[in-house]
Image 1: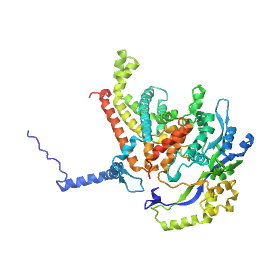
Image 2: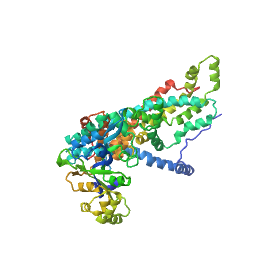
Image 3: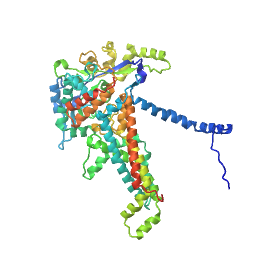
Image 4: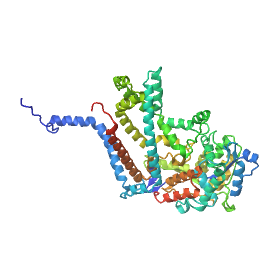
Length: 314
Length: 293
């Protein structure tokens, strides 16, 4: 039978098609306009500003790559980048480990399991600023609840928020407080693992650890890849948690961003340059470098995924 | 900030000013038999006598506290004959300024150790609350502004204030002025009406009432002798500084925000004991070349 010939679709060919295209664009226009004005234009503008000296008071002056060169000699730029990478490379693996372990517990047949699941997720719906102020009290070195518990057990009682060795750890604690969100996604992934795989392994005498390594880990690896990328982007952009934790008690006086600037993250330093120091050009250049760093790490994770992510029958 | 700028210039009007003096807790000084200091040597001696540490090495009372690290250490720099912004340029390595920071570290932080100092200040409550360390009797002395007059009195404290001690008699009362300003935003829909209102607020009678209600200093020297401030206890010490040659002003420079941020970071490094005042302030000097101008 002779195959039916299908003409390529040309939306401008007939009045009817043009009307259909117009209607389609009209329906999509809220997004298209929003994307153009709120995303595309600022992205392009920041690219231009990154090549200028721009203080908001004067018209931008083209300086080529000077802003990028200045970063090389800016000790606070490196400090903020170091702190951010430290939070990311410590925080993401710990978040994944706690989430996966916690998801196993939430997957057990326990009395009141629904309540435990709700409680674990509860911190994720607490506004970050409110949580930050709560943890400022909990981590207070003199009368904080955390040190009080440490005192009961005879453990060291760090000066969490005023000692440069513990400032970064305090930020990590606050970030990991919302681990319940990741945990619930893992819980859903665990429920998708076929039970017959575990039963077969059990019949073969596989230990709990063996079953985790050979069944659970590969089966949830696509979810792990997703979690790593999402968490990594969140950690690379962390702002609110260190910003709230590092404010002086009265929120009035100017203070360092944590003891020894140990909570100075890349996003906070970018914010300072843009809106406090009014160095909009330098801040724009920093934004592009953050994009490059995020893109590079994401591509490396995706590249490595070929070796450890298991997509079932594919 | 953009709303203050017309033709590249910042325009605003001063409604009130502020300066810093040495406030002290009368009860604590009396108990220790210490007279309010007038020289840096007397201040150092008073700090030593008024600082208390328990058997475990924890600080229980600090001789001299800072309600605002940046403002306090800048004031000590002036008291030592220094200036952190000499000639309208950042001068963080000015010898007198470095000496002021060093004075605080050597006399307040080092004797109790930076670890004990930082653990003590970690327990501070909010500024100007019942948990404020000066109100709670944890600070015997503090460098602070004129707004404390109204607050301390309302808090029922027995307190006094003296001009900031100086390294030499000529430097007695060295301090610096900060200014509260009002402005007409460039996007104001009715600039003329706003102008009329600001003209009224800047007039002596209105400014007198405004600053008195807030417990702030007026931005007009003609109001220094006004009797309206007589009901604010010890306010005369701050008022007198307005006419003092040792009261330093600051230019509204574009780099100030970044400079202050860097200074506070440097002060923090010193108070943490991780850098010497000289090294920390040299780092600020190195950064100051890239400040926005």
